Length: 209
Image (tube, rainbow, N blue to C red; front, side):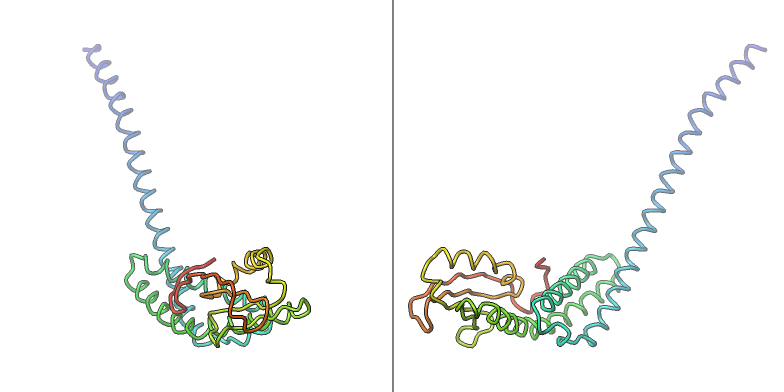
């Protein structure tokens, strides 16, 4: 009888040793799932709040704050990219309200970009023209199109200077969505070199940085 009690006691503790870790593991798994759910909820709240503020920002946006310097234009490009990133995040949300907010922001930003990109290109061209004037290089928007930029000067009689200038400005030209860059070694030259940049449309809300 005593032997049976001992065997039964041992069996109980063996069973307990099996059950307890399992219960602890299930509890831990449950806690992890709860934490993950909270993280998702917090993220959804965060992007939702950001998009609500963003929606209000479009109405308050003042382009004059970003004019007059290369730095100002760069700041605006960064801002548009941050907004585009938040829109992208909102559109992938599982919360329909957040998705709807993201779509509203996208519509607002598309309209804003259609106005801002031509203005930024025009302003940037003027600023670069001033910077290169002392080097006898003229910079202008060709045939009245803000998305086509023309560098004119005797320096561009050589391909090396064309390549160097393109490499120097290509990144910014792409961010500003210029469609084409032209190089002439004298004004109104019929023979010139051009490079197509194939940018997205001004209205397209995407990240470029």
